Image (cartoon, rainbow, N blue to C red; front, side, top):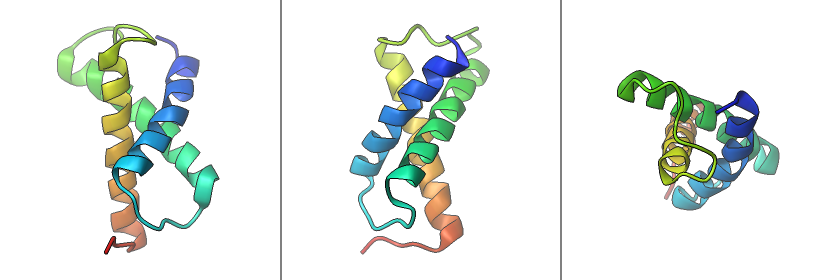
Length: 88
């Protein structure tokens, strides 16, 4: 799957990750999109490294979406740790 597809998936994965980990983050919608894109790329890369596949199955595959969402949650968690934001 191409980088452009991972970016598109990342936009949605960022919103889903934000819904899974609610809290007040600075940056709003733009930052959520960036986190999603980076998380989608991270999820795709981790899928290639951990599972040894050339590419995750496809745009509409459940494994693709899970990888992107997990990557986005990881990036969001790291962002919160670095920025010092804590949920109550």
